[in-house]
Image (cartoon, rainbow, N blue to C red; front, top):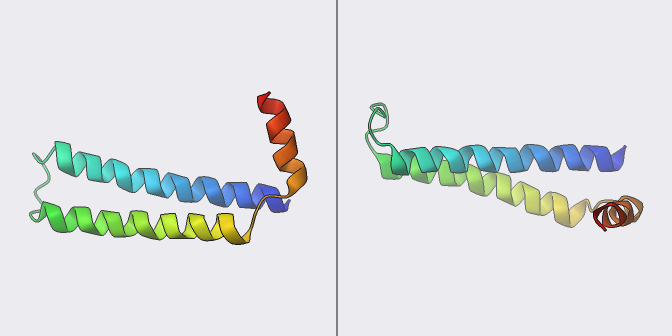
Length: 80
């Protein structure tokens, strides 16, 4: 159960990172139609702050809550 929760949290955090990176790509590539964001640089900076928060949490999760060794060995065998 522990590994399931760790993997779920990891997926959630990676999803959050990808969401905000996608937003940044939209702001950088499609500035037309983004009227509510007159200061694109500030908006990108806010998105980067959100990416950094998710990234920091992901690093903490990885460092302090490693997957149990049994599951890591099973994953290695499945990839072979």
